[in-house]
Image 1 (cartoon, one colour):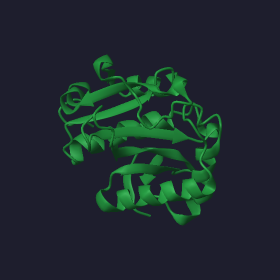
Image 2 (tube, one colour):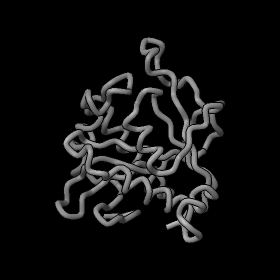
Image 3 (spheres, one colour):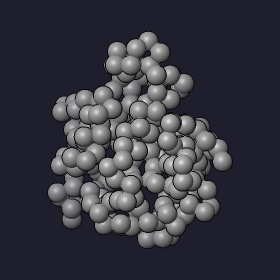
Image 4 (tube, one colour):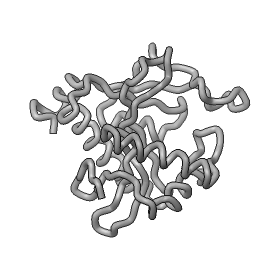
Length: 192
Protein backbone atom coordinates (compact mmCIF):
# COMPACT_ATOMS: atom_id res chain seq x y z
CA UNK A 1 0.00 0.00 0.00
CA UNK A 2 3.07 2.27 0.30
CA UNK A 3 2.25 4.07 3.54
CA UNK A 4 4.48 7.12 4.01
CA UNK A 5 3.21 8.36 7.39
CA UNK A 6 0.94 6.84 10.05
CA UNK A 7 -1.00 8.71 12.76
CA UNK A 8 -3.28 7.32 15.46
CA UNK A 9 -6.29 7.41 13.09
CA UNK A 10 -4.85 7.72 9.60
CA UNK A 11 -2.55 6.24 7.01
CA UNK A 12 -0.96 8.76 4.65
CA UNK A 13 -0.18 6.74 1.56
CA UNK A 14 0.24 6.85 -2.17
CA UNK A 15 -2.91 6.80 -4.29
CA UNK A 16 -4.21 3.55 -5.76
CA UNK A 17 -6.32 2.80 -8.84
CA UNK A 18 -9.44 2.25 -6.73
CA UNK A 19 -9.09 5.81 -5.35
CA UNK A 20 -9.76 7.51 -8.71
CA UNK A 21 -13.50 8.06 -8.27
CA UNK A 22 -12.98 9.55 -4.80
CA UNK A 23 -10.14 11.78 -6.03
CA UNK A 24 -12.46 13.11 -8.73
CA UNK A 25 -15.22 13.61 -6.16
CA UNK A 26 -13.14 15.97 -4.02
CA UNK A 27 -11.82 17.84 -7.08
CA UNK A 28 -15.29 18.40 -8.54
CA UNK A 29 -17.31 19.28 -5.43
CA UNK A 30 -18.24 23.01 -5.53
CA UNK A 31 -18.05 23.38 -1.73
CA UNK A 32 -14.68 21.63 -1.42
CA UNK A 33 -13.35 23.66 -4.36
CA UNK A 34 -14.90 26.96 -3.23
CA UNK A 35 -11.55 28.78 -3.33
CA UNK A 36 -10.36 27.39 -6.67
CA UNK A 37 -11.17 28.93 -10.06
CA UNK A 38 -12.56 25.73 -11.61
CA UNK A 39 -13.81 22.25 -10.86
CA UNK A 40 -11.84 19.39 -12.38
CA UNK A 41 -13.32 16.96 -14.90
CA UNK A 42 -12.71 13.23 -14.44
CA UNK A 43 -9.95 13.39 -17.05
CA UNK A 44 -8.28 16.36 -15.31
CA UNK A 45 -8.55 14.63 -11.92
CA UNK A 46 -7.05 11.43 -13.32
CA UNK A 47 -4.16 13.37 -14.86
CA UNK A 48 -3.51 15.20 -11.58
CA UNK A 49 -3.64 11.96 -9.62
CA UNK A 50 -1.15 10.39 -12.05
CA UNK A 51 1.26 13.32 -11.51
CA UNK A 52 0.92 13.08 -7.73
CA UNK A 53 1.48 9.29 -7.75
CA UNK A 54 4.64 9.80 -9.81
CA UNK A 55 5.91 12.51 -7.40
CA UNK A 56 5.31 10.35 -4.33
CA UNK A 57 6.92 7.36 -6.02
CA UNK A 58 9.96 9.45 -6.98
CA UNK A 59 10.85 11.07 -3.65
CA UNK A 60 8.01 10.45 -1.14
CA UNK A 61 6.74 14.03 -1.38
CA UNK A 62 3.25 14.72 -2.69
CA UNK A 63 -0.35 15.07 -1.56
CA UNK A 64 -0.95 11.70 0.14
CA UNK A 65 -4.26 9.86 0.25
CA UNK A 66 -5.65 9.97 3.79
CA UNK A 67 -7.09 6.61 4.74
CA UNK A 68 -9.10 6.17 7.92
CA UNK A 69 -7.56 3.15 9.66
CA UNK A 70 -10.81 2.16 11.37
CA UNK A 71 -13.01 2.10 8.25
CA UNK A 72 -10.52 1.80 5.38
CA UNK A 73 -12.19 4.82 3.73
CA UNK A 74 -10.15 7.45 1.95
CA UNK A 75 -11.27 10.80 3.37
CA UNK A 76 -9.14 13.29 1.44
CA UNK A 77 -5.50 14.25 1.10
CA UNK A 78 -2.77 15.98 3.04
CA UNK A 79 0.86 16.19 2.20
CA UNK A 80 3.99 17.92 1.11
CA UNK A 81 4.67 19.08 -2.44
CA UNK A 82 7.48 21.03 -4.07
CA UNK A 83 6.27 24.42 -5.31
CA UNK A 84 6.90 26.08 -8.63
CA UNK A 85 5.77 29.65 -8.01
CA UNK A 86 8.77 31.79 -8.84
CA UNK A 87 9.30 34.69 -8.23
CA UNK A 88 7.04 34.49 -5.18
CA UNK A 89 9.04 31.67 -3.65
CA UNK A 90 12.08 29.77 -4.81
CA UNK A 91 11.40 26.71 -6.92
CA UNK A 92 11.30 23.58 -4.79
CA UNK A 93 10.10 25.18 -1.54
CA UNK A 94 8.03 22.57 0.29
CA UNK A 95 4.31 23.35 0.55
CA UNK A 96 1.91 21.57 2.88
CA UNK A 97 -1.65 21.30 1.60
CA UNK A 98 -4.90 19.42 2.12
CA UNK A 99 -8.37 18.71 0.80
CA UNK A 100 -11.16 16.66 2.40
CA UNK A 101 -14.52 15.38 1.23
CA UNK A 102 -17.15 17.51 2.94
CA UNK A 103 -18.62 14.59 4.89
CA UNK A 104 -15.31 14.34 6.77
CA UNK A 105 -14.97 18.03 7.71
CA UNK A 106 -14.79 18.93 11.39
CA UNK A 107 -13.22 15.65 12.59
CA UNK A 108 -9.66 16.94 12.98
CA UNK A 109 -8.26 14.72 10.21
CA UNK A 110 -6.40 17.54 8.46
CA UNK A 111 -4.79 18.85 11.63
CA UNK A 112 -3.68 15.35 12.65
CA UNK A 113 -2.28 14.56 9.21
CA UNK A 114 -0.66 17.98 8.78
CA UNK A 115 1.16 17.77 12.11
CA UNK A 116 2.47 14.33 11.16
CA UNK A 117 3.51 15.67 7.74
CA UNK A 118 5.46 18.51 9.34
CA UNK A 119 7.20 16.04 11.67
CA UNK A 120 8.11 13.96 8.61
CA UNK A 121 9.43 17.01 6.72
CA UNK A 122 11.59 18.29 9.56
CA UNK A 123 12.61 15.14 11.46
CA UNK A 124 12.98 12.57 8.69
CA UNK A 125 13.62 14.63 5.56
CA UNK A 126 15.74 17.44 7.03
CA UNK A 127 13.75 20.31 5.56
CA UNK A 128 14.45 23.84 6.83
CA UNK A 129 11.06 25.42 6.04
CA UNK A 130 7.54 24.43 5.02
CA UNK A 131 5.03 26.93 3.64
CA UNK A 132 1.32 26.92 3.02
CA UNK A 133 -0.83 29.40 1.17
CA UNK A 134 -4.50 29.97 0.52
CA UNK A 135 -6.92 32.55 -0.82
CA UNK A 136 -6.90 35.42 1.70
CA UNK A 137 -10.41 34.74 3.01
CA UNK A 138 -10.22 30.93 3.11
CA UNK A 139 -10.56 30.83 6.88
CA UNK A 140 -10.97 27.05 7.06
CA UNK A 141 -7.48 26.56 5.64
CA UNK A 142 -5.78 29.44 7.44
CA UNK A 143 -7.23 28.19 10.74
CA UNK A 144 -5.53 24.83 10.15
CA UNK A 145 -2.28 26.63 9.35
CA UNK A 146 -2.48 28.44 12.67
CA UNK A 147 -3.42 25.27 14.59
CA UNK A 148 -0.33 23.47 13.31
CA UNK A 149 1.94 26.33 14.39
CA UNK A 150 2.42 28.18 11.11
CA UNK A 151 2.63 31.97 11.09
CA UNK A 152 1.50 34.37 8.37
CA UNK A 153 4.33 36.26 6.70
CA UNK A 154 2.50 39.25 5.12
CA UNK A 155 5.64 40.32 3.24
CA UNK A 156 5.37 37.09 1.28
CA UNK A 157 1.61 37.28 0.47
CA UNK A 158 1.11 37.26 -3.32
CA UNK A 159 -1.31 37.28 -6.22
CA UNK A 160 -1.34 33.69 -7.46
CA UNK A 161 -0.03 33.64 -11.05
CA UNK A 162 -2.07 30.55 -12.00
CA UNK A 163 -5.43 32.08 -11.03
CA UNK A 164 -7.03 33.61 -14.13
CA UNK A 165 -7.98 37.28 -14.20
CA UNK A 166 -11.60 36.14 -14.57
CA UNK A 167 -11.51 35.26 -10.84
CA UNK A 168 -9.99 38.36 -9.16
CA UNK A 169 -11.50 37.41 -5.79
CA UNK A 170 -9.29 34.29 -5.77
CA UNK A 171 -5.99 35.86 -6.79
CA UNK A 172 -4.72 37.24 -3.45
CA UNK A 173 -3.07 34.51 -1.38
CA UNK A 174 -1.73 34.69 2.15
CA UNK A 175 1.43 32.74 2.90
CA UNK A 176 2.08 30.96 6.18
CA UNK A 177 5.40 29.46 7.13
CA UNK A 178 7.11 27.38 9.76
CA UNK A 179 10.84 26.77 10.08
CA UNK A 180 12.50 23.69 11.48
CA UNK A 181 13.62 25.75 14.49
CA UNK A 182 10.08 26.99 15.15
CA UNK A 183 8.84 23.40 14.89
CA UNK A 184 11.47 22.19 17.38
CA UNK A 185 10.66 25.08 19.74
CA UNK A 186 6.97 24.09 19.66
CA UNK A 187 7.46 20.32 19.93
CA UNK A 188 10.65 19.88 21.93
CA UNK A 189 14.01 18.56 20.81
CA UNK A 190 12.52 15.43 19.29
CA UNK A 191 10.03 17.46 17.24
CA UNK A 192 7.48 14.69 17.68
